[in-house]
Amino acid sequence: MSAAQLAIGTVGLGSFELTGGGTFINLVAATTNALNGALPARRPDHYKNFTVVGILLMALLGGIGGGVSRDVMVGRVPAALTNSSYVVLCLIAGYIGHRLAYSEGQLFREGLFQFVTSFALPWYAVVGAQTGADVGLPVVGSLVLAVVGPTAGRFLIDVSSASRPSSSSAASGSSPSPR
Image (tube, rainbow, N blue to C red; front, side):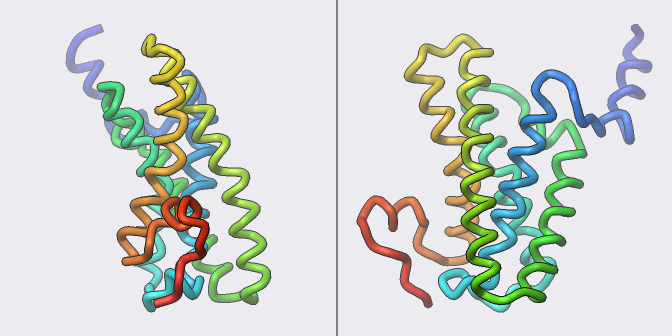
């Protein structure tokens, strides 16, 4: 394969892949974490009068933040930068989160947020551990990646919305206070 054919094959729609090499599980993790990033926009502890653009940015941070952090830690080019399906699916999940945040009641949003969180974080943990095994890390290194993936995206959301990071709230035994 010539260099021109290789370059043409990786540009445009050729970079939009949904399956292969663990991509599907990664996309499920990124998409559910993107929804997890969009839903807190109307929570009292994160509410900052976000517009739809702000909510979409929170979805992108949540969706690809953990995967980018994980991939950089193992010396890989982040998959979200080479496969446009990550960004597209995260934006779709962000828009869904925006629509839910403005159309449903607080109790529904809180329940959905808890459900999506419990669904998204294990996916990212599995992908992180698998990535560690793929690159030959010892068990402890794989466990570190399994923790970094799920927490990095949420940490970026909390910091970007000027909220106390939720992981430090859980560790201290207190709940985040509304601002």
